[in-house]
Figure 1 (cartoon, rainbow, N blue to C red):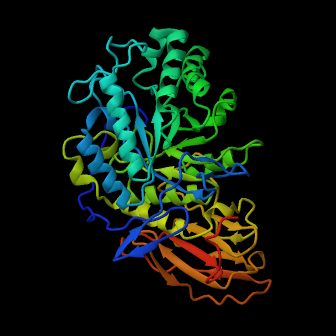
Figure 2: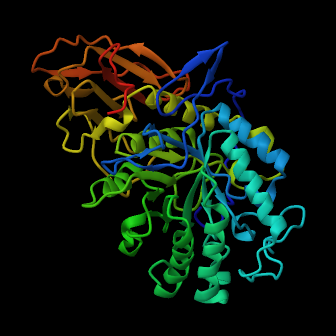
Figure 3: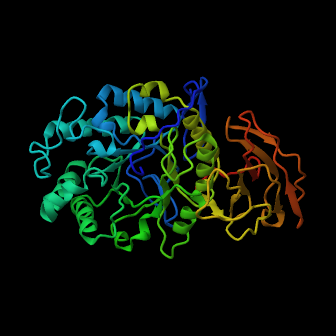
Length: 469
C-alpha cells in the first residue's frame, strides 16, 4: 500500500452486483441460475512440488482475494458480514486484514475501532490486549470462515505500528506473538502475513522485531502458513533470505509489469508458492505508478497467473479504506473482471501450467520482457502450458498476432479466444491440424470495452483437466 493511497481515480460507471459464486479450485456448478462452490477445507498447506497451495483434502487452491485492510477498525460486524457476502458472490476466497489498524492504514489515529474500542487496555502496550477488541477480531474470522474465505491476517503491520514495536522491545513483541498464536491456532482459515510496505526491512533492528512476532506465533501455532510483504515499488518475500525459515508462502509486490517479479520468485533455487500480494488498486493512482485503470488491472492479473503464481489479491480504494459511500462502490468493473479471470482459470488445470519463459511455444509476436517498464504500454505476451501438452493459455495485452509451435501441444484439439471484460469465449478460426508446423493466431477485433487484450486458450475438449495431478 505504497505511501498513503490518497490519490483516487474514480470511475463513473459501475456494474450491477454479480449473481454468481464459483469454485476457484475445480470449476463451476450451476444451481437455479446461480453458481455454488464447495468450500475449501482449511487450513491451507503447500503442494508437494512447492508451486501452489492446497487445502486439507489436497485440492489446489487458486487464491483470488481482496484487500480490506482496515476492516477490523472501520466496520461493524453487520457491515463485515455485508461486505464478505458481497465478495463471496464474486468468488473471492481470501482477504487481507490488518489485525491492528491506525492512521497508517486509514483507521483512527489511536488504533481504536470506529466505535471506540482500543486494542490494548494500556495504549501502545502490546502486553495488555483488550478482550473486547480481540473478540471482534474473532467474530470477523468466523464470518470469513462461514463465507469460505481464508484471512491473510497481519498481526501488526509496519506502516502504522513499527514505532510501537520499537517502543515495546523484543520481549514484549515475542510475547504478543505467543498470545496471538495461542488465541488463533484453532481458527482454520488464517494465513499470517507480516510487514506491509516494510521499507526498512534491511535495518536489522526493525527486522528482528517483526520476526519476533512471527517466531512467537510459530512457537505455539505450527500449523498456519506465514508470509511477509516487503517494500514497494517491487519486491518478493525471499529478497530477504532470513525469512526463508519463517514463511511458506512468497508474496510478490509490484507496481511494474507483474510477470517480472512473479517469475523472479518462480525461478528461485528453492521456491515457495508465490502470489501477487499487492499491485495497482482500482480507483486510485499512487505516485510513480500507472494506476488502477481497468486495462492495467487485467494485465497484472493475467500476467500473474501465467507466470507461475498460485493466485493474487485485488485491491480497491473503497475496500481497503472503507470511506463514506463504500457500499455503493462494491460492484465495480474491476471486481467483475477479476471474477472472469478466476472463472477462466478455475475451470482449467491451472496448477499444472508451466510458464513459457524460453518462448518454446509462443515463438513469435511475444514482444519484449521489460522488468521495470510501464504496465499501460507493455505488450509482452505471457504464456504457460501443461507438460502433457493438452493445455496452453496465452495473454495478449494488445492485438498483435502470435505464432504457436503446435508440436509442443500434441493433445490440443480446440482453440478459443476469451474476452476478459465479459467472461465469454469465441472460437478461433485457425485450423488445428496436429503436425510440426508453426501456426499463426490473430486476435479478434476490439471487444465491447474498446480495448483489445485477449486470452488464447488451446486445450483438449472434454479433457479430464479438472482432476488434480
